[in-house]
Length: 73
Image 1: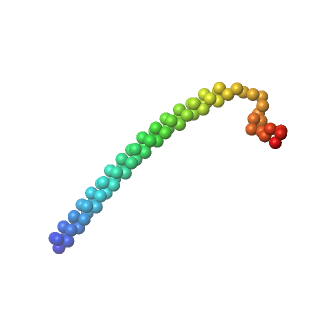
Image 2: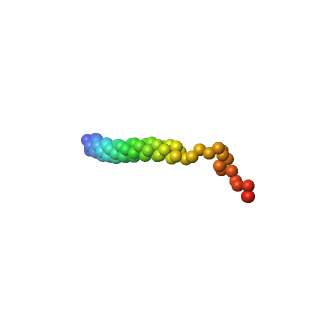
Image 3: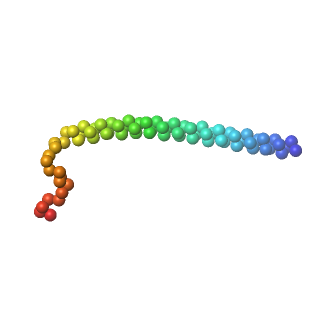
């Protein structure tokens, strides 16, 4: 009976070690993804500011049908 208990205990310890490794690996992945999301958020905010700045530089014309097909088509 002790042999069976030792075998089961060893199996449980092995499973525990594998779970610890998996949790550690997943945690590292989540940390990297969070960092990437933060970088992307900063980039998006910068791009929004650039878009606003460019929109402010576009001259405003009275013609609201800019995308309209020219009459010769």
